[in-house]
Structures are given as structure tokens and as C-alpha cells.
Length: 429
Ligand SMILES: Cc1cc2nc3c(=O)[nH]c(=O)nc-3n(C[C@H](O)[C@H](O)[C@H](O)COP(=O)(O)OP(=O)(O)OC[C@H]3O[C@@H](n4cnc5c(N)ncnc54)[C@H](O)[C@@H]3O)c2cc1C
Image 1 (cartoon, rainbow, N blue to C red):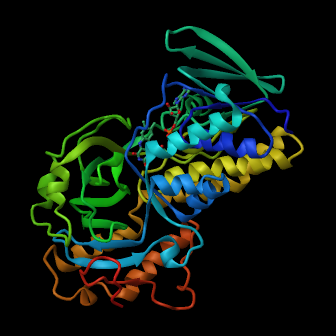
Image 2 (image 1 turned 180 degrees about the horizontal axis):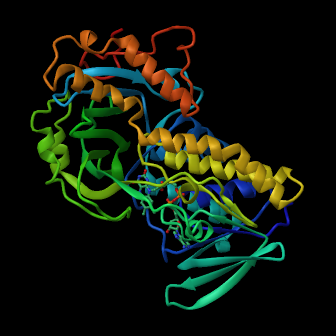
Image 3 (image 1 turned 30 degrees about the horizontal axis):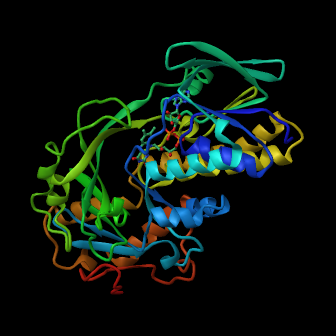
């Protein structure tokens, strides 16, 4: 159905990647984006192996590699900085594709630039907010509003709503859907320009989730020619209610004290937090999974369809997979309704499973277990507190659930290790 007239709402990773996938299948969609000028906003995203596969299939692997950092080792510590467990990442673990850390805004800008190059300069209409849709006669009309408040309409054969966590289209499609609920936990998301830590390719998971938890990873080397690395960090802690807005700024004052006794090898986490270039607050809000993403000729994708806690790097990656699946079904199906149903059948239950898995702690639960088993004290031998085999089983179960089963585990081989607090990456089995 290449002559199909397709409108996409939202030029985030979901909308832009969908446009590129549709173009590969012979379509030429047009994107309507509310922001008058896209800027590289956000902080870090952990792109999983299946996300890198998608980016490679878009023909963007070299550019993506140039702007991101290879993920080699993932190391877990208790709140004192004592090592609990480690595993390798991506190709170092035996996967076919790399896991990479990237600045969310840089990835979005790469997709945007590529859409303009491949689909034409007029493929993204900025400063145009979609207010509502109307299905009629096998078509959809969108009510749009520009930045000056002027209204206009466009009509398309298909509308793909990729308008993010606060999706106006989801609200219209599911007016009675339950209100999102604040979990009580907020993320402090920051970046710091600094010397690389460990081997320069390591992600650290620190702390006791009972009180506060921190994730740290590098997202750009030689950032803007400074010779330094841009490091992304996220601290989770309880906090009073706040609004779900990616641009909400905060300070480290409420959380830095949780790390007073933390002495992680090779990194002063408090200094890193004090030297932050920017700090954003993002509350963890529960959106109940939807049981339907389709209304006539309108379909939800990305965060609009399946907002999930931004833990574990699956939000952006699943958003990118949506576009690929939808484009494939549109190219192969008899008509638009059949393509939308096939897309939903392939994606909805699987992604909702990931949404729910992210509500829990996933493999991060090992840090909670260590805190409980030690009564919050330092340990002398981690093997007596959390045997490697027990941790391995938790990790293997999680990786399989999010669609990237670990190689080696089925054969009974140990997949995790302990670095022995040397420069990370040196396995001590
Ligand atoms: C400013 C910003 C910063 C972010 N930073 C991070 C981060 O640091 N780490 C992280 O993990 N995730 C971040 N995210 C979220 C992340 O991009 C998504 O979770 C994921 O990539 C899925 O992308 P998406 O395209 O579905 O949603 P989004 O990335 O939220 O993109 C939605 C797009 O739709 C546009 N839009 C919204 N409503 C309308 C409308 N009515 N009409 C037209 N356009 C509309 C928005 O302006 C936005 O460009 C951020 C999102 C935004 C918008």
C-alpha cells in the first residue's frame, strides 16, 4: 500500500524511527511535532542489543557508534560500594549486537537529520500540536494548532500517534482509562563532564533500593572536544508527588547524603553529583497497560501506547521496534485495518509484559536482597550473602523476559562474575 497518506504525531524517537522504517517500505509519511525547534534534550539512554540491531537496520550504525559508548561491563554494589555481582554486556556477553550508552537527544537528532535527508525537508512540520482526531469514511482528520494558536486540519489515510507519555491522542482514545498513579519514587537524572571511570565502558549500579539507588554510565567520550567524558547518572529515592515532565529541573541536595558512606572503587560518586551540569526530576508514574492501541485509522506507538518506568533501557528501544513492526505489517497486509490488527497482535501483549516487569526491580533486586540479608551492614564474603549462581539465575530470567536471553546460561555455564574491585572488566569467576 505504498500510496498511503500517513501522518505521524510526535518527532521523538518513536515517531522518527517509524518514519524511517515506513520510508524503507516505500511510504512517505509526514510528522507533526509540537515543539517549534527540536533540540537534543534529555540525558542518557541505555540502548539494548535489540535496539542497536534496529539502528543498524536503519543504516545508521556507524553514526550511532560515533556518538555513543560501547557497554562492556555492568557492576553491582551495595550502599558502601562493596561489589555484589558483575556481568558483561552486548557483544562482550556473546550477543550479536552491541549494547551502547547514548545521549537521548543525540539519538533523536540523528533520526531527525536522517528523516530530512531521506524523506525531504518538509517531512517534519515543527511547531504544530495535534489537538484531536476524527475518524470518517476510512480516513482521519487531525485538528492542529501552531505556536501562534492558529488552527488548521490535515486528513490522512492513517495516523500514527507517537506523542509520548502525556499523549493527547491516548487520552482521546481512552478517556476512561485509569488515572496514572505516582509510585512515591522520583528519579534525579543528571550528567557530569569528567574523566572516564573504570575502563570507560562500565555501568555501575549502586546502593540499597530500600533507601536510595544509583545508576552511572558514560554516554559520550571527548564530549564537544573537551577530551572529557559525559557521564549520565540517575538516583532514585522517595519524594512527595511531582509532575511527569522530562524537563523538570531539580538539585542534588535531597539525595546526596544517601551516598555519604559510599566508597565505590574508581569513582567518587559525591564529587560526580556535585559537579553535575544539569539535574532533572522525573517521578515514576504508573500507567496501567492498555488493552487496545487502535481506533479506526489511528494507532498508538512508543510511550503513547506503553509508557513504562525509564529503568533498564527498554522504553526507547521498544518505541523503535514499534515502527519497524508497523511498517512491515503495512507493507504486507491487504488493507490498513488488517495491518493495524497484525501490528497490535505482534506487539501489545509482549510490550505490556515489559511495562509490568519494569514496575518491579528486575535484576536490581539483588541489591535489595543483599541489604536485607546483611541487615544493612557491610559483608565480609559476598558468596556467603548472595551466591553467584543465585544471582545468575535472577539475571538470566530477566534477560529472557525482555527478549534477550543470555547466551551460555542454557548450557549451564556461569554468566556472571565478580571483578574483584580491579579496573572493571577483569573477570574473577
Ligand atoms: C524532552 C524529553 C526528554 C527526554 N529525556 C529522556 C531521558 O533522558 N532518558 C530517557 O530514558 N527518556 C527520555 N525521554 C523519553 C524517551 O524519549 C521516551 O521514553 C522513548 O524514547 C519513547 O519515545 P517516544 O517518541 O514515544 O516519546 P517522546 O520521546 O516523549 O517523544 C514524543 C514527542 O511527541 C511530541 N508531542 C507531544 N504531544 C504532541 C502533540 N499533541 N502534537 C504533536 N507533537 C506532540 C513531543 O514534543 C515529543 O517530541 C525524554 C522525552 C522528552 C520529550
